[in-house]
Image 1: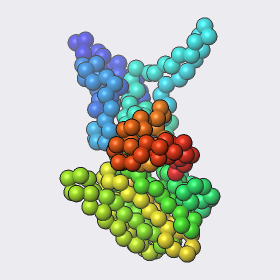
Image 2: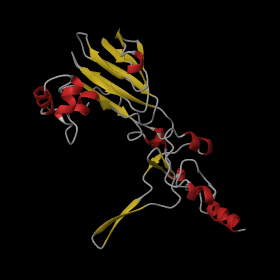
Image 3: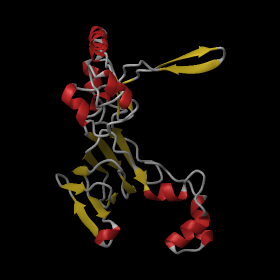
Image 4: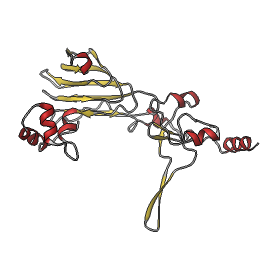
Length: 260
């Protein structure tokens, strides 16, 4: 009878999520709540079976007591992909909207390109849906440096200009390099986890739109991670890894590395 009474109390609590896990969803069994508390469902498959959506929201609140800052989190908040689900009753159309992607961005920076992301942090309605997109503006000679998306594949569409794009496979495939020059209307795919880049080889500015297979694909810029790590990676490690002199590594570590 005790378990039944607890389920009735949860149902009477209203539409706010009643589990701290993605797999619990609404009306999770009390035992499941305790067993799986704190787990994160990366792809968001489980909540989509029980929820129409999980809008990124702030389920916790901060308050000050005796000069200390405390964070309070509701017991029955669903935590998915590292984000709390917003109370569905409070969801609005704006949670599914991002505006301004048509506006060109300045490319006056060291790499000559600018990436505008539409990830879950910018568009809350993407949470758990496994999709996102970016706009990339290239100045003449602009480069989106070699990088990796640790949590998603990428499909890129050229809207304006001419881009040279490519990616390198893993050790198991002998570091095979695939490269192609793209023109407006061309589409190119970068597989999950592969180091890839885009370079403007045309005589005008270029623009591309890319879709990614995660609401939060992330980005790891190879050179920045290696030579701008905090604290720095030992020059001896990088010198042996790249088979170069340690002084060259130290010079590279002193440079300003721009995060695109």
